[in-house]
Image (cartoon, rainbow, N blue to C red; front, side, top):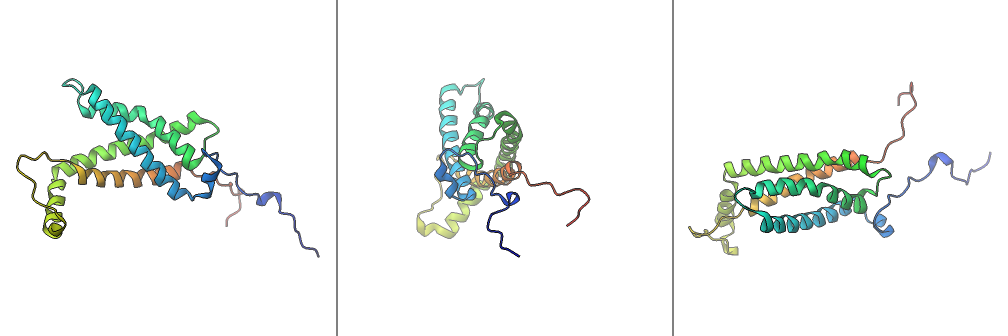
Length: 186
């Protein structure tokens, strides 16, 4: 009876994902996804605002620019997630096509939530909550002629669509599991 000191070939470590830099493998996937999400949001917002400034007109409203820019941005966001989070896929186009619905459903979810928050006057409710509970921090009633922003709604939408995208991305991009042999139950 001997001790087997050589690892078996079936117990091999899974291959590390091909990330932008090898050192990224030392950071857990969750924080990498957060970094990637922040970077994607900054690039998206900067690009979207630049496109609105350049192209907005009565025949090209911001909502249409948003939809077009978002559809064009899906491959960019996928490439960033591949390079920072999941690793560059062996076959890029099939990977992009399996991830594109994540971006499209996030866009749809964000649009629906934004419309819902507008209908229930979420921004006003958030303002009133902050004024009633945190006026000592400087929250005050907005002036009647002050332009209303959608800051709080945007934050909530960003968090919800971020969690949605994270969950779906982890599910779609999970490393394939070894198939259990047929006929055997665990």
